[in-house]
Length: 350
Image 1 (cartoon, rainbow, N blue to C red):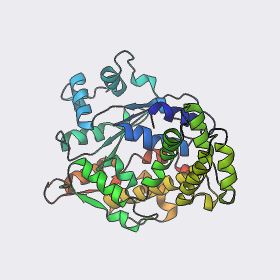
Image 2 (image 1 turned 180 degrees about the vertical axis):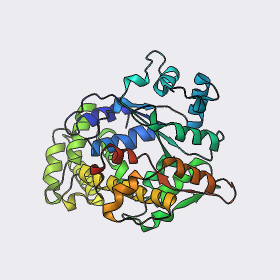
Image 3 (image 1 turned 30 degrees about the vertical axis):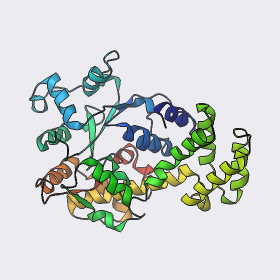
Image 4 (image 1 turned 90 degrees about the vertical axis):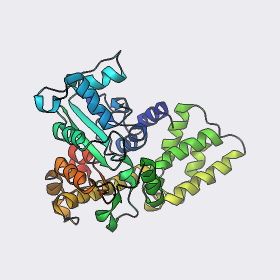
């Protein structure tokens, strides 16, 4: 699904958001067009529009180098006020320079990527120590080993997630992606809206972007299993006129039945919101496991544990356990989903 399609599709979800002054800086397309598009659709309370997401296009170690080119090699210790939107817009959007003062909050999401040739424990630690305040210089969330870690749950709940780790020797990054694809139970839910959209476009020839995305969202809003046939028929009959209508109806019905959310009286969005809440809670527990050696948390202590997490300490421990390339390991952990809890912890309900 293209970025343009995603923006259009996003506008149909609930009431269209007002433009905000929040900025989300991410490493690549997956973060923007799969994870955060869906996360914002499931949590419309979060005031970030798709246009407020900048794709940097490469890793955190090259971002460090760009900062160093602009501010000198002692930037982290100099006390200078690093203007990250300026650094990135100068490189990526030189005709439209932006500045830190333009944004009320800056969220930064990058991967740990120890397998990368540019990896540096020193550089990533300096970045984590410096970018700690979303309302000032920006807040950095690092995903271990990569963004795909948010999908690395085998069941829900997943009792084994607390001890899930990967060997440093599992290189390059595509090997971890393959491992996640083999073990995840999350991916089928993440891919589902894109599969619906692709099916309508490629198989049934609905080429009008606006009509197709509206159709997709109407399908994703279905919550009554006993009315699937009628509801799908009513949605598709205006789009598909020939004998393909019956085939399309039963194909989409089968996709809905396989995920099972309508059986529980939920829309796809309601189902995914609950799944994201579980992903967030699993990662709060995992971060607490790494930092404090305790995975199980009582329900009334989640917020307290979350607020006590120290992303720098977690990074230091990840650096320590993964230092040996032959015997080291990386704790699987996704921290970028924490920004939902930081935005409003009441949104997180497992």
